[in-house]
Length: 207
Image (cartoon, one colour):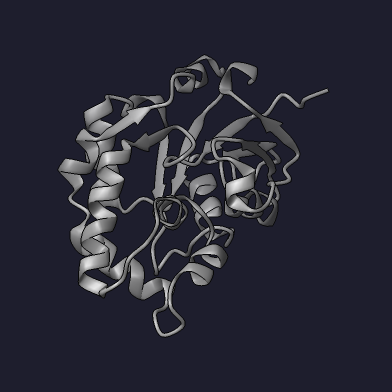
């Protein structure tokens, strides 16, 4: 039996929304130009969606993942990205959940704000937490704990869950004492691994 959770947290990019391939390739091409590198289409996809372990494998040894993201953030335009962002067809199913829900995302706040407004989904959520250097990055539980505090469910025995497309989402859920639901948006053969969660969904239609 699936528990009846008191509150729900969701990842954003790759879980509820994604970007058109043309925009992803445009941004990654600009990153390549600045770094003097060239990536394949699969590598561009993985750099956008995969874990830092895979990014480290793709990037040259002298370039850290943090340095990659610094260049990425310089060329990623919030408005252009929002205009190229779409909701997954099944994402609106989460509006049927009869419990408080929130977002814990690696998406930078300036980008997330424009995306929420562009897609008109801000009122779907009671809380939005954007990870940062100060707050921490999933699988660090700190951003999840911050969201729980903002939703006022941190200290009263409520049972919650975090839903995401990546291993870092499940790790953050478990590290914060939540169940983790993995929604499989990406080909595990391309990723080179499957993500183990408490539950696995192929679509939010199964939620």
